[in-house]
Image 1 (cartoon, rainbow, N blue to C red):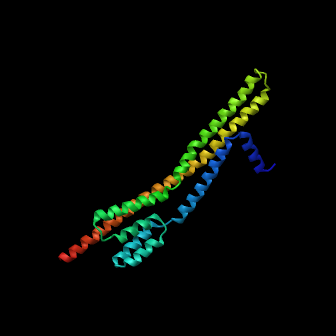
Image 2: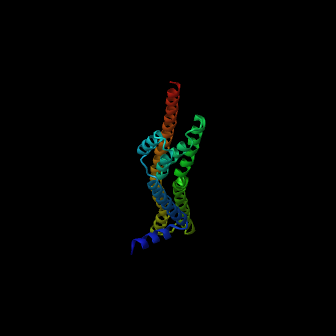
Image 3: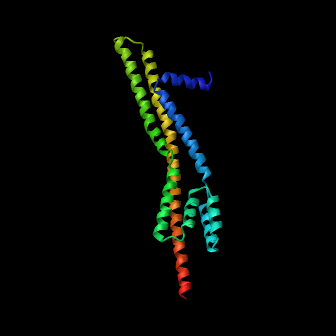
Length: 217
């Protein structure tokens, strides 16, 4: 018997509840793979990017600064791009623009993560529901035969009923692990976006102050 046949046999013995649990596992795998590919795609070096953008801005080369920002596929690149495009705006407007871009980037980062949370929450519950249904059916047989039932048959029914709980936990545990991994990744990127947005605003204000001082002198 192959591994696939053994797995299908267990799914069949678990009953109908195994179908939504299996569906949740497929959806969870799809989300995890999509998010892993996405986070790999937006990987960037924010410190190096920020330094390069600031150097080009000091040389008044806004076009090159925008090229550097757009070449980066990550959220810091989008933040700095918005900063370069709005560097001549009032401070409050620049801060508001960077904040809005940051919120949009956070939405991209958090895409589908709520789906993982739902799967992690309902998979054990569906497994427990399947077990309860299986236990009811097993003890219903005991009632029908007025207690004169083969103990091995009863144990077999209980064993099959517990399969759904095991399946639900098998789905929920790795999903929870990956969900926390993504949450930490999102938290780090969110902090980085906020940090470099502040850096950009402060750098712009320092440049303006220096320019005013030179004019006054």
